Length: 71
Image 1 (tube, helix red, strand yellow):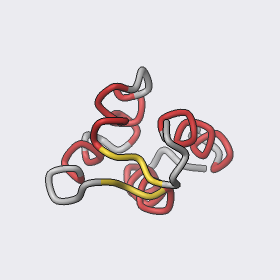
Image 2: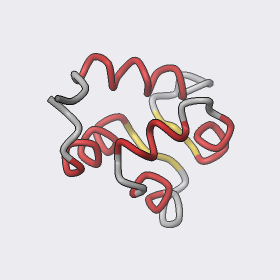
Image 3: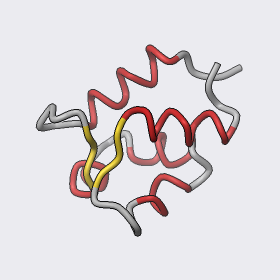
């Protein structure tokens, strides 16, 4: 059992405070959904921010899919 793409999109949109289509580290760090999103990617989302300033929905979806929590 996992999340639907629609549910993941809702979590992403709730974290994307400035609604620019990307979640940056400040938005992620301050989000109440941070533990959930980090857990859904097996910790890889936070690691992604070590090499990138922001993450798109498609990148997040790929990480969640790789972790086995999508679908």
